Image (cartoon, rainbow, N blue to C red; front, side, top):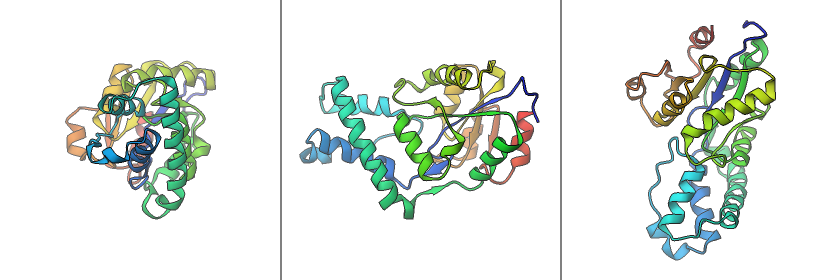
Amino acid sequence: MSSPDQPKLLLFDIDGTLLDTGGVGLRSLKEAFLETFDLSHREPEFPRLDLAGSTDGSIVDHIFGLFEIEPTGENREAYFSSYHDRLSKLLVTFSNDHGRRLPGVLELLTRLRDETDHVLGLLTGNIARGAFTKVDHFEMGGFFEFGAFGDDHPDRNQLGPIAIDRAVDHSGHEFPANQVFIIGDTPKDVACARACGAKAVTVATGGFPKAELDALNPCFSFSDLETDHHSFFAMLG
């Protein structure tokens, strides 16, 4: 167990790291755009999107530009409200059959909460309300009370300092960079960790093979969060 005055900060990505919605996120995103801005007649023009590690904010900016939608606060809120409504419904009607919490995650989070004094947070491209809806649906909401999200900043590399500041406010502890671990399944998670001097931890449970993630030289690399909890805890010291 860590010293009470020197806990580590663990910031988890969501999609591909903690859970898999079975495509609900992309479906919700697309349907919300087509309906909110009356674009159903232009559905064939809707682009293929690289969601892996991207923020919802950057995705919205990209599509607003493609369809020449005025990027006002009102339009963004209209879109995000529609998106969240669809996400909430589809998680129940579709993801119950096609989505899942990834293997070993619940056990790992439970041990981190019960056996250590480490502080757990989220660092994700999801907007905050979408992030908490997802982790709540897959019965992980009780582990996370703060984070940094895709509606905080469109550039994922700017989210690390936001998450760390919120961790300080939440816990009352300071977290030097070498005590912060950013855990995710994409190259963008590695870049995000490096941007704020944190330790990058990759897990190959999303769309990127372990060899491809290892080539980025993360501080630590795991095939998944199920098979080697001993090494995960050893990483934390």
